[in-house]
Image 1 (cartoon, helix red, strand yellow):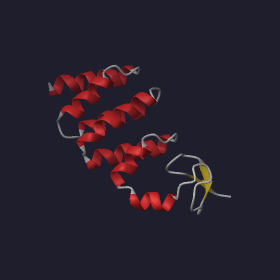
Image 2 (cartoon, one colour):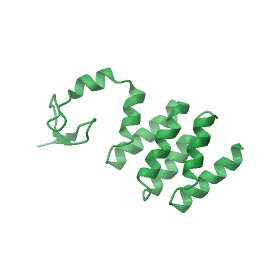
Image 3 (tube, helix red, strand yellow):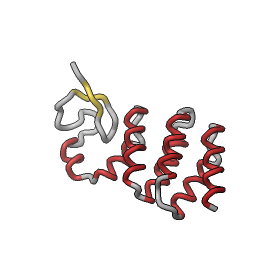
Length: 128
């Protein structure tokens, strides 16, 4: 049997199920009623790195300045995923200049991974 994951609680569920058996939410209604940007932000919490990476790349293309904070939080939530952390820095780099971007880079300048930390520090120095 094929499965996919609830976009709300990330529980594994059968394909075609209307309501998530784990959280009880109507999946289709949530997807219909929730703006795409908000679904991308929520996807940053997904336990599957492929889903998070898709959201990161999409958020870079959307260029909403307020995405900087959630992107930085995602990098800090999964500190061992250096590839994801670097993709997040690239996404933040594509965002418009502003306080959200600066705060996100300041957070990432303390990231546990050396490559992410140094790149964030370099980005901060470049925009200061």
